[in-house]
Length: 536
Image (cartoon, rainbow, N blue to C red; front, top):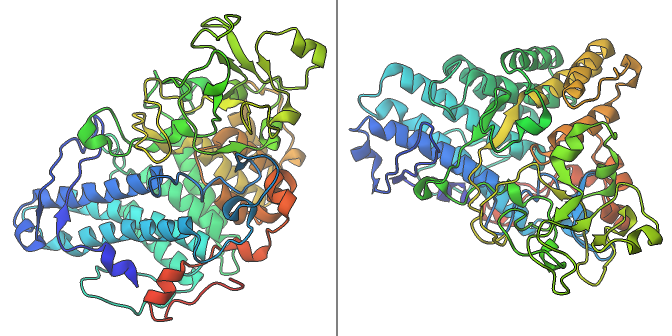
């Protein structure tokens, strides 16, 4: 198996933060025997854990971004007309040789390997201050647990590698899902006892970050056959603690404003910044859900709208927003403004160049405009300029980031919010719904919605699992793993086939797809000790 190849004996440190706790860069490698004589090595190993996890989150490989997180769900589909097939979005011929599945598997084990390197050598490094060592061990266990959570939900039971692999090995039998979950919870429980409550250096894992992840893990396990009786109540308690410690921002627009970089609502972010040596690939979220707008009159390849990465929200997603829901305007733009004069001179800089009405306009209304008007039923119809076109996202705007393609470093500089109180409200609400307390669930959802201008209170009877999933889409699109949300709630098949137009067209999604296939190269390299998931 190739896990051992992800555990080099030499240590290479890459500084990763922006105005946070990892501003230095040390690109020299040395053996752990030599490095153990210097207390700085401990921080370098810890920085490596953060750097690997950040890099594998913002991209899987040079041209793969979030393809196993939002694609092939009810709210995100592929950017192409309603023809053809695709393994990841349409579930047609998804197989053990699908490249994205191989890369994702390897990346998660790279995260685990980096954590194991620190954990197994922490006591060997001389001169490390006791509190720093304790906290660092907790942080490494947090990231190891997170990687295993991604693995177990995507692939089912996987090999548990909780120690460094320093010699070539091929036998890595799969642990059961239950065993993997026990290891995840154990790591997070230990992390919660070790990390700081409120780290003085921005960007470190805090107790609330651990609580947030543990809440989601326990809530997810509560749907399993091996659930523990207190999973739901503990999940709720952890999420409510996060909510209490992280007040909501005054408005959704302010939460994602480029002028409000580090919100009180944020629980954990990956940091980037503009320092080249620590930027790495850069934040890629500003490339989410954008089409080739630059081919239309009045538009150019600029540094405001930038480029997209080849997928788009479904029509169902756009239909979810009430007219009073302020999250719609803060999340996507229906009007694209010209940044150059059109060839015929009819569209000037600052004019509307493309407009997407919420409800269809008549041909007479369209003909009266100089700019391009695209009705909702035309999002997947080739108009002679682009194959697909849709209201374009602004939620993650990164003005000034260069126009690049998906196989080039994105160089986005904004922090990437990974956990925030907005989700904690919905985790607690889902837990209360699952425990039968719809009154408390409604109270949490109403509080969150009121922040976005929706002041008419929902009744307890209106809080259903489907409603909470819709609310997660409105609040968290592009921020969390939608595929895992739908799988957790046993809604992946139902909602994807109902609302993803390409998946609905091909009707290939079945229960076998609730687990992805194990990469074939891992099965081959393990000599058969890794067994494939059923029906692949």
